Length: 238
Ligand code: ADP
Ligand code: MG
Image (cartoon, rainbow, N blue to C red; front, side):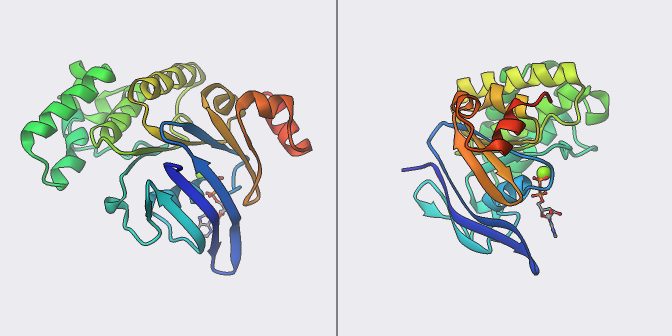
């Protein structure tokens, strides 16, 4: 059974349909990338998995459980956004610990999880700093640390690298992949950058105008694109 099963999921904002019955199965531990041009519905789909948008049709299951009507806090997921959304008046340590404290986690467990995340992400020297005292790459690591400390079943990333310069973007791609190889957490990663998709994904979902054009492994899409759109999108320089 899929760890995340998106089945015939539709989304309308008022009269406007932005997703037309899309289905994606994501296996336990898989790194799946949703890719497609701006406005095609990637963030909306991810936000529905996170519980930040209601579902207009179809079902989303995480593990054995249909989560359509569960609030975000009750879903076993952690999301990393493009703009980091760090708390400016909290230190790195406090930023990472905050979600756990809200859940009344045992302080010893919080400390242990924060330390582990800081070690994994090379953030140990920065724990007492504030976000404004960090570089873009370090801020992005803190945002990932906040996700890691929650030990979620599923990581959701929405264009986490698009605010970084080109060189850092390439480095962070590698870091996120290494993180995935280490933790093996099921991941849904959204990007409009086809190179990012090709280099990071176990499986790519190519979207256009609220529909899925093709799902496949990177080389499969490259060798056997289902149509001209996929061929043009995957084959074009970023
Ligand atoms: P992507 O992440 O692929 O760029 P989005 O999921 O953000 O695309 O948006 C898909 C479509 O839904 C776009 O046409 C966008 O304008 C529309 N949309 C997104 N959020 C809302 C909203 N809250 N209200 C109305 N329309 C929205
Ligand atoms: Mg988006």
